[in-house]
Amino acid sequence: MSTSKRIYFSTTPTLNRRHFLRGAGAAVVGLPFLDAMVPAFQSSARANTNSQKSTPRRFVALCATLGFHTPFLFPSKEGSLDGSTPYLSQIQEHLDQLTVVSGLAHPEQQGNNGHASELTWLTSAQRPGLAGFKNTISVDQLIAEKVGLETRFPSLVLSTSGRSMSWNSNGVEIPGETRPSNVFKALFVNGSSTEVQRELKQLDRGKSILDTVKGDAEKLNRKLGTQDQRKLDEYFTAIRELEGRLNQSTSWATRPKPDIEAKAPVDISDRADAIGRQNLMYDMLVLALQSDSTRTATFQLSGMNAVPAIDGVSTDWHQLSHHGKDPEKIDELKIIEQAEFAAFNRFLGKMKSVEETESTLLDQTTILYGSNLGNASSHSPRNLPVIVAGGGFKHGNYVSHDAVDNTPFANLFVTFAQQMGLDIDTFGTSTATGIRGLEQKTS
Image 1 (tube, rainbow, N blue to C red):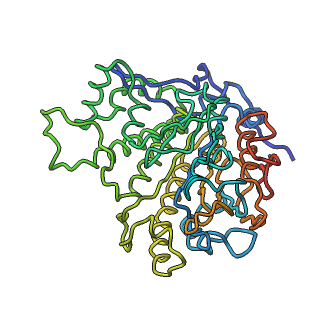
Image 2: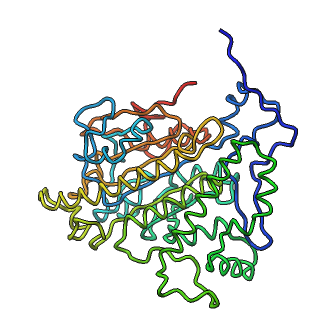
Image 3: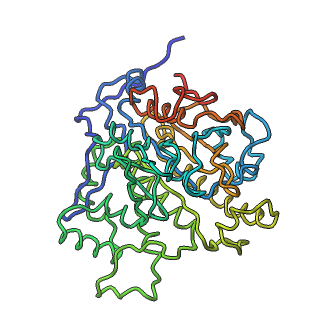
């Protein structure tokens, strides 16, 4: 049977992958991946062959440092995921695009305190915080050294607390950015100090950053095909929605009137709104990846020694994580962690909605979601909760490794690094180049 081949005919030069929309001031807006970036007269067969090269791969790691109550996450047996547990039910619509793994751990993770394993979640260095300890490079930063020159930002390090999982080649922690507004400015505002301030004042008055590049955008739009025009419209809509959410966090009652200089977009200042803060930063992460501003990112989702603003929760989150098998505490903890999984589900949905050539942003991004604690109540760093989403892997299953003799978590990092184009066979405490149950899709 013969198969038809789609041919990309174009009478215009291929659009450069690093093309930016520029305004008269400091505004710079990156573009999502468009079909116009595929070379002209390229057959679909060749386009498919080259899509892995032309459409960039990304890597994202998300760590919830107060852990998850794993009986509510792990299914009772290996096999296809069906949303049968309380936490998987929150991400049921994406189960075919993720793999849940148990029985993984880094060796020798009992450190100078119960939360010391936060330091080494992405490095696998042993005995964190004890005398003589020196951390090593985290896998995200190793990847950034390889792919970072291709983007404006080699990596993006985000956090709800300021601490991070990212460590450079000298074993020094890279501070996490906690303010979505700062990320937004870094992504879309450029130029001299005076130009930046002028641009931010315009944004404060309700002017979209897209308005400042309107002319350039209209010129580009006339050159694009229908599908690319739709992609660009979806991308711009996401930016406008995010701008609105950033500004909404400031009450109209306390905002200066239009003839007075307004403040820059304000982040969610209520620390108790933990889920709202996660969602806002997730949105920034999607935009950063969609605009190809970075291809490597981490987001540390720290809990708090306070009561989160979630209906049904009245106890300090940290105390709840140390539930000691108290049913009432576990019930409250379940509410918090289900909300976290709902936020993760929302993030996956946004990633999936962004179309790229022959795939989606989720398909092109390997996402690691989990925790440095397998049992937060006892501070155990064994049998870690691990979810891998997207990235072009075969998904839809729960894989249970030995709960006592854990498989090295760092084996998975070798897979991630190789997926991002690194030619390595080991990382940290790895003993193999991958783990059972996570395989690359074959075309």
